[in-house]
Image (cartoon, rainbow, N blue to C red; front, side):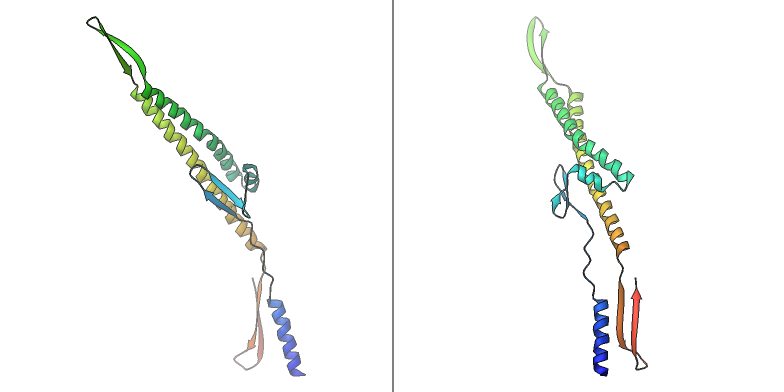
Length: 176
């Protein structure tokens, strides 16, 4: 009878210590491309609106995400305007000069216009990349918060059954 009681106690303790695996927290994965960053949750690409809903807990990251969305639109527009300005500067303006009664055609090109166009192209590219960085950082913040929330919800305990140094059977319970 003693062995059956001991086996029953061991089986009961093992049942208490065995836990079902908790689901992992809902985290975001990021895929960075050249001009955009795609955000995924459970292998499903999130729309801008859905990603914004995930950031509602933080006013700071909600505002930064709103700014990043505007920068993603403005970046290509600024680059296109800069490209147009640079091309216009390179094409130049056809002009004529009269020297000693003779007419000479030439093309006048504006160096400041060319430099301004190149600067706008680079600025537009930087706006887009900065928007990507903000989205990456916002999703990283979301993941940190999701893991913290998940760890707060976790309750675990550890039971150990064994023979102590005095030769008796002992039970140790640790709660987290």
